[in-house]
Length: 85
Image (cartoon, rainbow, N blue to C red; front, side, top):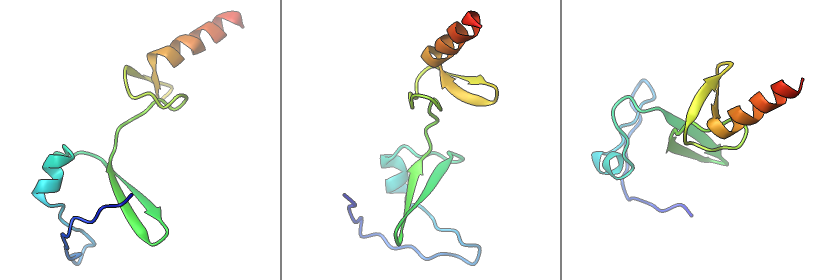
């Protein structure tokens, strides 16, 4: 459910908006944090990006494997598959 904050900001000439400090603090968004942008009908949804495993969606114990993020459990499963080959 979407909850209105009652805060209104104008878009500048470069298409930017400023996220209010109160929201950044509440959502733990720091300077240079990546933000994901989603479109739902006529709504734009912003969400702090949290990297996930491409296979199971886990966000803990991530490692890079062939330039993709995977969790240690999925990495172990891949290793076991390779051993069977």
